[in-house]
Image 1: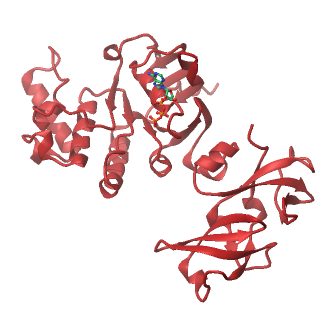
Image 2: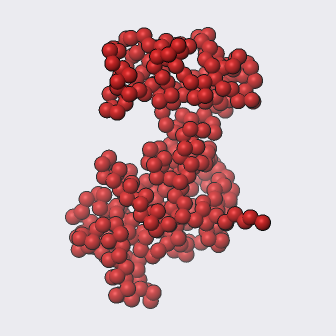
Image 3: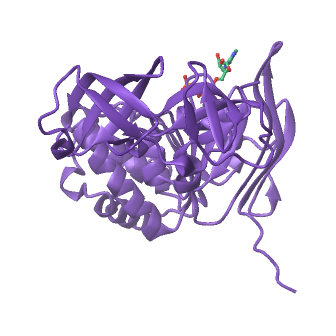
Length: 352
Ligand code: ATP
């Protein structure tokens, strides 16, 4: 009989209340060994609280947590096996880079020579060997965050927890460190959970993304799954850009409030007459063709490889993304036929 491997981390019915407010509902989550999972959601959705419960920094109101087959629900952080990096670097300002990295390498398991060798290895891993003797104030923000990462990895933890580790960095450093983080995580094969509110970061880093809203996981899937096949209107609206509108299922498509009929692939459970919320991605709105809509161009944003357009059609504002050459000779105010591929309209029962 085929046996699936036990997940490395198992979260069962985990919840947290603050007074009468429930910050995290009953969350189920299984993370495989070596997996990079992102908790993605808007501010206040409970992602940090969930991460802190996994770390033992926040006591759950209910539910259980298992790591590597061991229940850790009520263990203090020090008795668990993880390293953590926070948004603020949280380095000791009066200690050198090397001393910061080696801070946790104490006790009989770490005689001085072994600890020094480990620190040197970690500094090489994050590319900071030359900065070992400097103090945190003497290195850049990106370097400080690499020190924090090296420190979190010092004890070879089984689990790496990251709470918005890149948020305080400027855009270029952030992008660079993002790639480094991914490379490092792959090389070490360390199971990683990262909290972020930045969807691009989540999509580019994670093996799977847990999209959260109001204390719940709204969808758990690969980046492609949550982007191309959102499970509900929240995920469709939160992950990626989109135009969305209310419509009614009719014929082989949907009818908009102004009477326009758009061909669409309605799911079998969308009976004729059903009210739906429809989403379409900007890159799926094509200019030209014999489309059902004609849009008036009301905005052009040139971004280099693409132009972001705003169009007014059927009483709605539409976003489109096209190659700049598709716009040659087209000016603001132009009336442009729009083609919406039927299989690109994403239909959902309206928000509850
Ligand atoms: P952010 O990205 O803004 O940090 P988040 O998704 O990480 O948001 P949490 O920090 O987990 O959200 O907070 C979830 C909810 O729980 C928020 O509404 C927050 O105000 C509330 N909350 C968190 N900690 C406490 C606390 N100690 N006491 C009361 N309410 C809290």
